[in-house]
View (tube, rainbow, N blue to C red):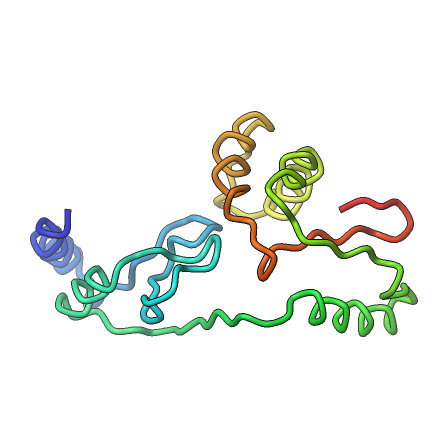
Length: 169
């Protein structure tokens, strides 16, 4: 709980000093998801899907414990479809692929679940060489990742891009 936080941090600091450490970095996990950072502002709006959802009070706890931001990340809202079409056009100039041939659509919850096999394979292929990646079964992927994530799909942040040759995602 938040009330236990100062005691926990002080114990962590004590143990770190006893091991010869002169500083701590955190919060940090071995996840390839989003638990390696905190949301620092914009609390008047809900977080983007998969972005940190901590509270402003939790940030204050870290500040009070002496933590300071070392790296900042920014999330921006923009016309995703137009931005991706521009990127695909630039990529097409390099690879010879036609940007207009890619089919871009809003990723609805139903579409995400309908294409779970392809999304599982893409995710596994993207992370399989990461030293901390622990593969899970397609069934666990659906239960732990897709089912919680699918309801968060929104037209401002969630798109499916299909390859022109095969219509694959």
